[in-house]
Length: 316
Ligand code: RIB
Ligand code: CA
Image (cartoon, rainbow, N blue to C red; front, side, top):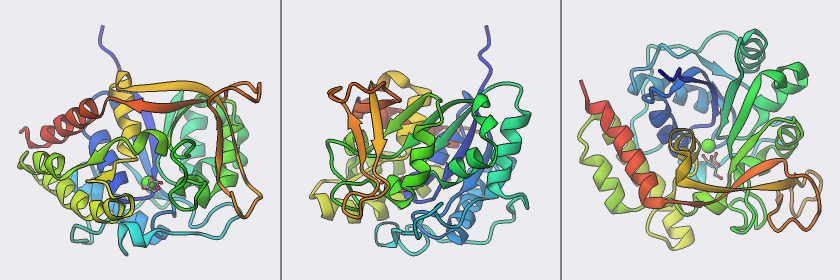
């Protein structure tokens, strides 16, 4: 029996790690990428929107429609992370003006229209602040019936925060959007810092990617070499955590991850702990679980998958 590809919409804020996620997704026969939507996050929307164009062009996937979504969070002022990702968001490679253009439709309207017209449920992969997803749900709540599942990079529990002591960046930038997704009543598979901090792109792993000797793998290695510098220094580790590719790795090889059904709430008021994801891992609240929280990953298996999927770009 042939397995038809899983239809997905990708919402992201490239970001070097978002780029690696896109490289995996755009060459995966298991996935049908219906569209890629940029959101403001790591860098402002103008930059993330240019970056999805460049990254789709590098992957020779300019057949996938590209959209710009929201340029700021639902309520919070935009917080960006140029200190981590560089001014462009994908520092490490030369930017250029690709031929492929954005669709004129707003990304939120693309999400709403695609889901309303869908004849089968669609998976939402989100690796930036969840602003576009939440805005789409606010605009047309009935779209949740067409959402198969959310696969998100966001949140932190045992690992602590990366933008504040208690909050992970994507959750912190738009906690109100994260809250809307948590309450959307659809399955959520969440890859927070608890698991992404286990997958570190060490120099050896980057060298293995560079040795694949194809343009996309070279781009990935260049991006990772830049991305490594900040987190390696911050955490004193050899390599930076590859947050966003965990989402696609899960879709391609779910057995790489261990997840636990947990009740999760997010702080949307406190200045001190804004964006904190209170993941009830030990079930002390008695609340019904609303997410599958990833907590363990087969690190070697992850990098084998990542390297294999980048190698395919060299096949002709
Ligand atoms: O906290 C890490 C997350 O924030 C990643 O998705 C990174 O790209 C940034 O968006
Ligand atoms: Ca991201």
